[in-house]
View 1 (cartoon, helix red, strand yellow):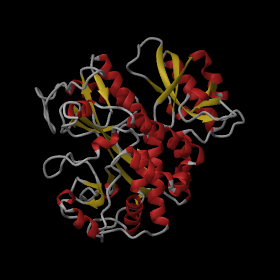
View 2 (cartoon, helix red, strand yellow; view 1 turned 90 degrees about the horizontal axis):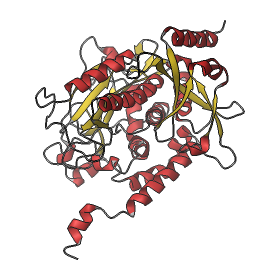
View 3 (cartoon, one colour; view 1 turned 180 degrees about the vertical axis):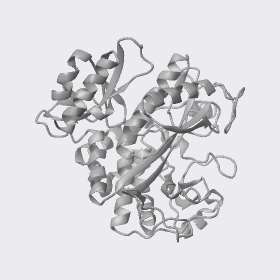
View 4 (cartoon, one colour; view 1 turned 60 degrees about the vertical axis):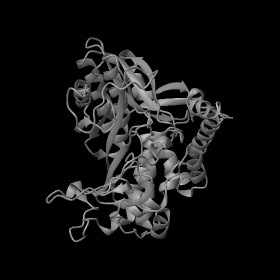
Length: 449
């Protein structure tokens, strides 16, 4: 019996043993929005063998002129029980790969795009590991951003009213096989962070999609609203999703070099140079919403809102695009770089893809890595930054579109179909936003003009 057949039998047996009645088949559109087809357990065996057909024309980025029929093929390795659903006649989930009716992978499927880019890394002998630090807010409702507390970093009760929410979230994640390293109150009012233990990027992309749903479901059960909106409060820090990443060959972390002052290998520095060189064009993927750029602005104080505006790297400063966490003796496996631009509303399959291909290009072309920035990059003058060759990330979705539009790296990494679909979608979003008249404009200009 093949491994695939054994996996399918395992899923069927698990569904029987755990009294599963309904199975949700999950996949995402190009924006990372979770989609769902629900079947009964009686249909599970057929779904595992043949997939489930659906109309792709209603899915963002899936539609084509001459084809709309798609097939969702469940991945048996992703079977998990949903712990927030009833404990009798339970509900399980399976992530799916999307195929065309002829059996070929659909090139607009973000999961396929990541799988394709990970194969490129695998062909070079690498396994790509990532560990996201996901920030989010709890509010009273989705209608207005009313915080539950006015706590700050690591605050505990009574300021941190969401301690139990985080506890229930961590327990639910663990039930689904997702390991959490840390959770705590973040710097803004009613803002929180959960750090997911690193694993291979393919598993982590699925885990990140699961994480976002779990956070929202646990909050909903307690009568509050959780959001991954990058910047819901104008005078508070926005939410980021800093992504720790490294490359391994077998059990060896190839980013580690004991002889380097920063404990980074030449390969790690070339990888980082690739990220820095392509940061502006990648930002459309890592920060894909109009609101994303309200987070990427200077703020007050020495670190502003701690947003990574400038394309530089450092070992201590948290205001640079890339931070290299300090090395601890005996922790070679933990050597990594932390890419700080992404926000938690990105599509993780695509965000992991573009970071990987940028880093691999840096390795393959042996890009030279600039020196780290020891000073506070925010405190530098524009002329000082210019002399150091420190560029700035796009300041708006429009600038990000312009930076991405001619990117050969993004086109190659995402494929023609998804690349063009993403650009089209983001141009429409910008046009819709650009024609709006905001409350700020009315209050500012109406009385005086």
